[in-house]
Amino acid sequence: MTIKLAQGWQVMLADLSLILFLSTAAALETRDPADPVPPSAVTAAGIVQESTTPVAVFRAGGETQLDDWLQSRATDPREQLTVLARYTDGRRDEAVRTAQALATVASTQGLEARIVIEPGADDEAMALFAFTAEDQQLARKLLQ
Image 1: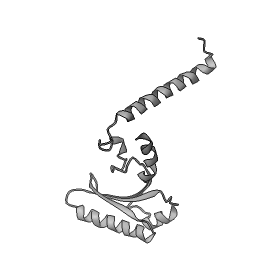
Image 2: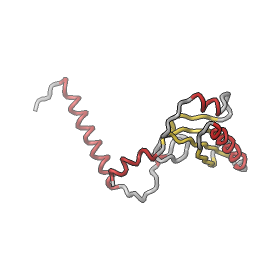
Image 3: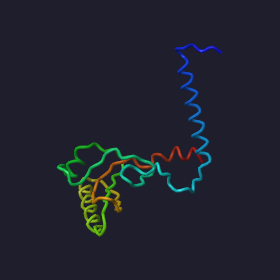
Image 4: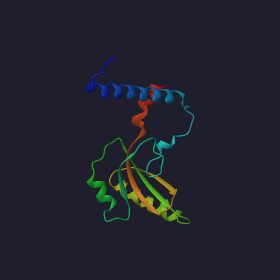
């Protein structure tokens, strides 16, 4: 079989893509649904968000206030707002108060926020917008 030089890389790329697709499908077929969430579902923020990635992040303590930030961005009804507060030793109550304050500001904008409090290396609070996993259930149902 002779392959023209101009078409060789395209055929090779198609073959590699097919191999990748088949190996991924085989791995998904053997995965136990009872297994915990895979490590790839943990976002850069450190929280599990049902295999979603934040599309917008607000960090408290900057020059911009949360209400101004929320007003400046267009939201999608499929997005979920999560208020994340991390705390170091002995500062859990302060993190809870900070998270509640951010969630209250969000509720004045008509947004319902999920609150997550977790220990961390630094004391920080943030608000994250991410697409909910409910929209991803269609693909999961096809696998079953």
